Image 1 (cartoon, one colour):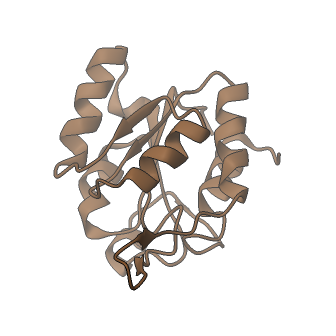
Image 2 (image 1 turned 180 degrees about the horizontal axis):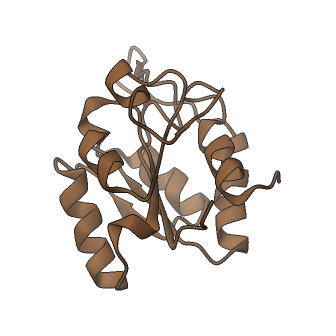
Length: 156
């Protein structure tokens, strides 16, 4: 498998189990699996930048991205394909040179355009039927790391 020049990822349902948790005071919580950190490290060790494209716009994801030194962060995105196209133009690369992992119907267009597409095993049927790589792990269980390990042919 050819190594991509850029890896893009959805968050909710890929790095998380897709659940949104609220406490009685209105605080929002999300759980991230530390396994996915290794996926970012593998990319960075191979000089491949990582970007997050999410329809949600939360401080939680922003903090996680900062902690992991994510190269590109796009929150509150309605059109993920248009965002990826704009980033590819900026980086002088083609969509066929990227890898993208997503889990829901709002990811379909970008998954179709990416050179390497992936999904966690918990993704919706429409996504699972068309991706190149389906991880054994569900979203929130290290699916991003598994996707990266399959692309790079290595374990952390």
